[in-house]
Length: 314
Image 1 (spheres, rainbow, N blue to C red):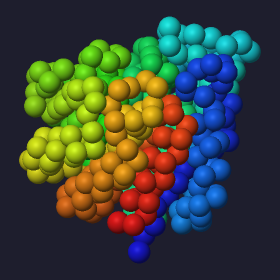
Image 2 (cartoon, rainbow, N blue to C red):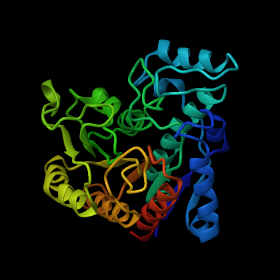
Image 3 (cartoon, one colour):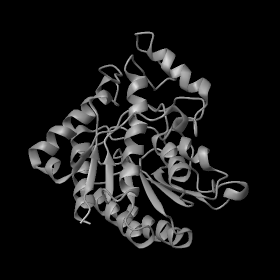
Image 4 (spheres, helix red, strand yellow):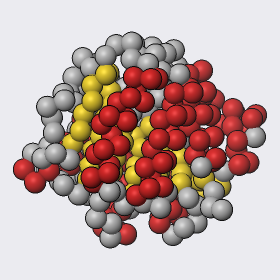
């Protein structure tokens, strides 16, 4: 039986944001410690990420923007491309490797080396726009991965399922008029970046291939599971994806400081199983999950524990 891959690289810790920033290096160090303590580390296949080729990043981001982030990182100081996003001398290399981890995972799944994968990366990606860093994000890891599946592996239909508590405006923007990429987002309504309304459904040939489900404050595990059953499952039955990518944000956890939903780690485990069922039905189980948000250290660790156990136990 094919196993689950776990992808991580120490370069992710060199992206520094300052001691008070919620997207900090400790998000990954505590995950690694927990996986080693519980034995989950030994249950995964560990693949060494390779830096993403710049041409893969250019599928989503402009050359000027890529160079801008590289030059800012080379100044040797912290820099702020927007009010909430902080970069450092290690940011460019970390961001290139974060994309590379996703591409490495995609290749491994497509080559049947593993069944599925979880990419423990930072910086996250789903807010990043073609020419703009935003919301802690520099390069849009998942969006670049979707394009890579099409360009490198010839797939026609990719589904991106985003359950981060914040709407993935960058991912939606990348594919809003594209019928070959289905973007589904569950996120808390009236929350940063204040996009992702239910009437945002795509444009032109992409009309109907974006599906946003804003969730109210206080939404629970059962609310999310019902939304998956009501909205996502019928959409996937019609779309029939050849590969599923998850923008796996765990900031909807009840302990997270940036949201007011009350999801539990058990709820994230069940969402994972529901997506895995879809992957098993439509695309031979091919699935790669990529870390986005999650800013309660305890909530993040327990949620990733549940997420990984579900991926491993398929």
